Length: 209
Image (cartoon, rainbow, N blue to C red; front, top):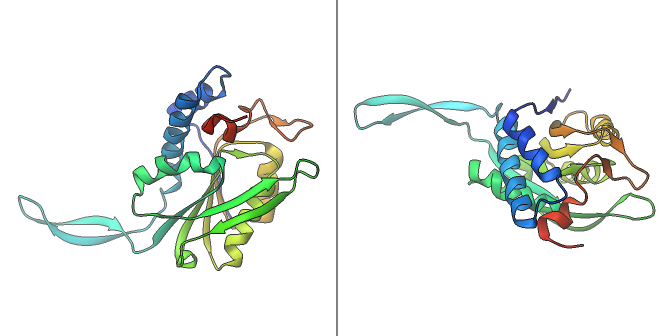
C-alpha cells in the first residue's frame, strides 16, 4: 500500500503561503515554486537505498554511503510541472527528465493527452511525477497510467497543493504510488479549481493568462 505524506515543514508552509498571495509576481512565484519542489523532493527521496563503498579521504581509507544503483527520472506534467523540475535537479542532477503533456477539457474536466517523451530506459528508473496542483486528480491519474503502460514500476507523485477530491481519486486509482503533498486544501469549486489554492499555477509560473 502506498503512503501519503502531507508536508509539515515550516519552510514549505511559509513558501506556500507566499505563492498563494495574489500580489506575488511571476519571477518570485517561479523561484519559490522551484524552492518548494526542492524541499518536497528532499522528503520524497528519503527512502532511496544506499550501499557501502570504500574511498580515500585526505586522511585515510574509509567506508561511505552512495545511492544504490537505481536510476532516477523526473517526469513533469506539462506545462505547470516544468516549474518543479529545476529545484529537483538541484538535488538529483543525474536524473533524466521526461515530459507528459495533458490538458484538461474545459467541458468534461477530463485529461487529454497531447505529448509524451520519456527516457528510453524509463521502465528501469524510479520515477518522480510532478505537478504543482492536484485538483480533480485526472491528469495525475492518466500520467501515471501512461508510465505504467510503458513498464515503469516504482513511481512517486509530488505536488505542492492538493484538493481532497483529487487526492482520494489518485490514492484509489494507483494504490502503489507514494504521494507527497505540500499542503492539503479545503475543496474544489464548481470550476474544478482548488480552494483556497493559488489560481492557475501554469499561468503564474510563465506569466500568461
